[in-house]
Image (cartoon, rainbow, N blue to C red; front, side, top):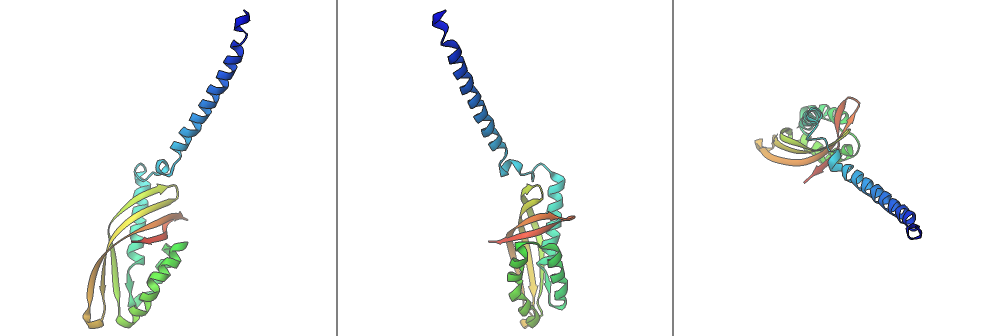
Length: 169
């Protein structure tokens, strides 16, 4: 029996080591499951993905279209459909356009041709937007067309999705 005195000590050390290993494995498994990729429900929550895609498409079509004859309409829409950093970004983009719009009777129509929700995590989303932009001016009757591609960050505020960030490429 004297040769087995060390057995309880060895079993105790083994229990501690195995318990520590189990705790480490559980923490690692939790970290793997709790990444932004695994929280992304864009592919699994079709209803919410469709909702954000539809509302942001409407917002882009409205906010990025501009008519010199009704500038107030676009600016009001921007106040309702933009939030956070997107407000300053929008003002930077359209600040220059406002003056040219008045001078040249600019009409800019933006139409989203396709979009994809790349991230949906609770009340936040990120979308890639493909759009066509048509403009006409009185400057020698000029008309132009340009494709556009950009990303927007969106947040669900109140009862609708709003654009909170604009990333141009």
